[in-house]
Structures are given as structure tokens and as C-alpha cells.
Image (cartoon, rainbow over all chains, first blue to last red):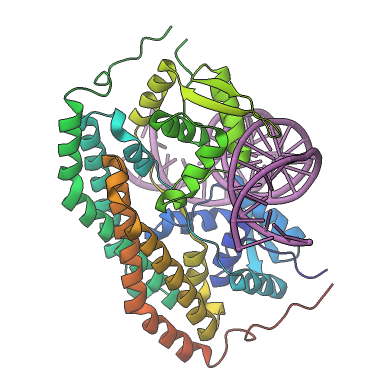
Length: 196
Length: 196
DNA sequence: GCTTCCATGTAATAGGTTACATGATTTG
DNA sequence: CAAATCATGTAACCTATTACATGGAAGC
């Protein structure tokens, strides 16, 4: 009956957060959303609540019910000893490679079909988003963070910075080539929607 | 009613590849796997074949059957005009933010529970993998690539480089802190596995 | 008055991963 | 002799996203 095998998913996310402090499902989601790490550790209520239920049935977390008036009772979850072991097990597994799903890169990769103006707007928006995230990272108080968290913060910062630098240095190259190729027009310059 | 709405998923991936050249499902998968872009555009047969079937039913691709002996017939798919429009539509959508699922960062983020040695091994393995990928990117002949592909290649290269640099510059900081904190031991130094 | 915050959850849906099923041919 | 390449596909499974359902309190 060796502790349930825990893959690195919503369940592991809950275990990780609960290892830092006991919390409700709502608070776990909040914790993931706020701060710069919201981009790394994503999970909606639809995955967190079922995950907590499963963890409880597996004996990896315990619940304390805090009745509230005019509001659903708070269910404060805590890591059990077995839960801590399961987390250590999960963290001990060799990590798989990162999975990146970037619609931005997808679009550019197949972007022969787009006009230079579309590409430019795309990159402009992307840069704005990256810079906003970068500021968010920088503004995050390091004093509050555990060593691992600080490390990850620096990691994210470095990766975002690299993207900003690359985009600023190379956007004009891409736009230039799109203009040259696009004069003959790869496709109507973005106007269709009529349909059958 | 207007051509089937195409989200940026396995179907769009097929459309994108088929826009470059006609191909079988097998070849599409091959194309995604080989070269440095295999990391960006992942799809198994289990998603490609159904996607192609759906695209065909929607009239976005056409099929030419090439009978073969002692082997399933090749089904060579080509983009139809409507398929090209659907692709343009899909590419025209504003991209969502990147989704990153990094088990590596997850482990480090919650890594208080790991020993310094485990963390060191983790980073060592990661560095090796990153360097291997970096070489793969560098070794890729740019002459062969369309402008968008070149751009994405450079993008990936820059991001990988940033990760390598960050890890090499900061791994010792993290290990040092883990050693200092870990002497009192956050948990048994990795030995369990018994149990039925 | 509208939105956001608090606080829980279920159900439907969509999507991908893995395993299965088949089988000759080439390469190590 | 085993493994990888070519070549297709289906089915079960697992997970996440989304929408739905409920509802008071506080801030703008």
C-alpha cells in the first residue's frame, strides 16, 4: 500500500504549497496566481478541488473544518507525514524536459502567411507583455522567499530578459524580410470573414 | 457557415506543416521530431492521425492515396484553399501567453525537502541537457530555414543560452544554502522504496 | 448598482498520451 | 537476433479547462 505515486501535476502542486503552510483550496489557487510565479504554476479550481479530495482520500493531507456563517465552511488542508513522504518521492523523480506551448512562436514559425504589419503588432504586444512580467519579477521582494523560490525567480527573470533582448535586437530583421517577401503578397492582406 | 474554427493545437500544427509541403501523417510527426524544433511542436500519432481525419472531413486538406505493397498505403495530405484560409485565420488570432510546464523548476521551487547532493545532481543533469540542445540548435543549417523558422531558431537559442548562463552562475549559491540549511536535515537523505 | 472578494464544489467537454493491433524491411 | 524504420489507425485513460450553481459582504 506504499504511498500513492504522485506525478508532478495539480496534486503535487497542492502538496508543495501545503508543505509551506496549511491552506484552503482557495488560498492555494491565490498563492499560485499572485506574484511572478503565477505563470509557472497554473491550476484552476476545477483541478485543485478534485486534487485535494483525492489527496485526502489517499491520506496525504488532512482537513480541518472551520465553520463560517453565510459562507461555505473553510476546509483547511494540512500535509500529513505520509503526504510529506509522497512529496519527497515526487520531487526525487527525475524531471522530464520542459513542455512549452507557445502560440506566439507557433505563429511566427508558420508566419509566411502573415503581413509585415501583423507580425509587427504581434511582436509589439509580446514585448509589452514580457516587459510587464519582467517588472513583476523585479518588484518581487526577495526577502520573503525561500532559497528555492529565489533561485526560480532569478531563473524566470533571466529567461524573460533574454526574450526581451532577442526581440528588440531581431524584430526588424524579421519585419524587413516579411516586407520584402510580402510585397508580392503571400495572401490577401488580412481581410476575410464573409464565409459561405 | 464559415470554415471550421481552428485553435492552435494538433490540427493547426498539421495545417502549418502541410502549408510548407504535402506529407503523410508519419512525415508530419517526423518533421516535428527532428531538428531543434522538436521541443516546441510536440504531437504523437494519437493526435496527428485523428487531427488529419478531422481536417479532411472539414475539407481543409485533401488526400491522395499511394498504394504500397506489404505496407499500409501512404496517405499524402495536401492543404486545400479553404485549409490555407483556415490556417491564416488561426495564425491571425491573438496568441495566448506561453504555457510552461517545468518539472525542473517545480522541484527546485519546493526543493527545501531535498539534499544538497540531490539538487546538485539535478542541476548537473539539466545543464547537460540544455547544452546538448544548444548544440543541436547551433548545428542546424540556417540556409534551409524560412525567415520565421530562423527567427524562432534564434529565439530558442537565446532562451537556452540564458538558462545555461544562469545555472552556471548561480548553482553554487543554491547548493551552498542547501548545505547550510540541510545539515540539520530536512528529511531522510533519500532512501525509501520498500513497501508493497 | 456593478464588480470583486470570499468559498465551495460538480459536470460537461475537449484534448493529449499511452497502449494496443498489424507487419514487412532494413540496419546493427 | 534484436531493434529501428516505415505506415496506419483505434481505444482507453487521464487531465485540464470551462461553465455552471450558490450567495453574502465590501468597495467603488
